[in-house]
Length: 429
Image (cartoon, rainbow, N blue to C red):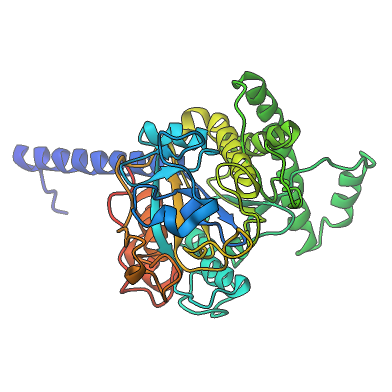
């Protein structure tokens, strides 16, 4: 048998190589840990949220003329827009979101749209949530497919009575519906567990449901503590945040009880996300943004909805606490509304709208995308805000830079047939 002795140089080289390998492993582990801390919340505003009121371009010379009685007043005027730059502000109901913007933690994408141009709620919501280039091209949602690209350890949930399309698909996601739980026999969970113990379908489903319920109790307790510690800030609305029906004359200010509930829903969702091993990705649906009549300006129907939205965001940010620095919230809608006010002081179905991006992990900057202006010659089909940014580009940029999903997966599986749509750059700090 021949024994080979290492020279001193070979031994030192081996030690150096081992050290480099250990350093690489440590670097990868640190990167994986940082990635696991990052959180994404997708808020879908259903009904066609009017981007020109969410973030009014009061500095655009054509804005006030087009909007007439529903125009948001200029920056310095009573009830005026909350200034972001010389052109754009936020609706005066969005005081909390504006405070985030002043800290560099909120930005707008003011001329964004999906590939759909039909102005149908059902079709536009399908394209927004499926991430496909055409209506009804797939039965799963882009956020569910993104989970598949991230790996099996990522947990996700939807907030509301049913899971939205954006989170439906092969990857299982929990769901939580706000509201009181009916009284029941305390023995029921144990009875069902015994009954379904050997059932390959119902057994795991029951276990997952009971685990979600346990998390919900912890999250609700955390939300109550957060709510008690928060300042007396007023806030926003939608479904699952309860949205009252639209009266002919909306109240000047929304009921306080609804604002508190909206804030608590946000804080409770945060509670799910900050628990050890908790939720990393969440989807929330908010309804009733279809403002064909009596839309209102600084006050009124749309203003009341945005007050509740602001409250939800406030509760979410407060509940996340230190985790806010690792979080991104993106708020989008299926389409915008007409640039012109209609004959009933409302707006009709349009094309481009405005997306709102918030979070401590957001990179500071101005608007996302290009502003086409509201000159008549620049309106889409002479009626709508012209789309300059594909919604998929925004989502791709967030998924790549915030959650680490590679471009190939984004182009092929998360957003099928979208290789030509480049991710928005430099969105994440």
